[in-house]
Image (tube, rainbow, N blue to C red; front, side):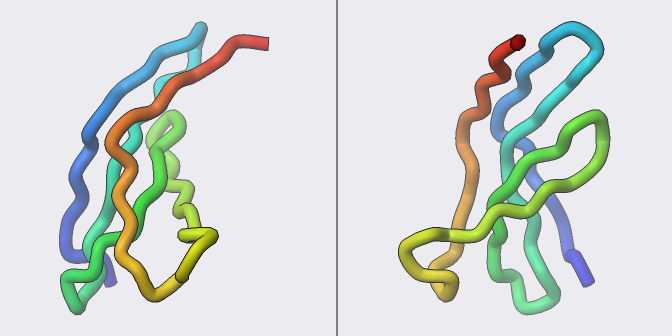
Length: 63
């Protein structure tokens, strides 16, 4: 169960809108990721999955 979310940055490319940020779970631990067109994509900390993670900036590159 998610308790809340915070978007820290926004990027637009064509029809795609992406926002980087984080969500809080029921124990108020933050989990970083991004929303792409409203759908949440959670990311995993590659160093230590027990460490809280926040995404502060996002960039979209058109192909």
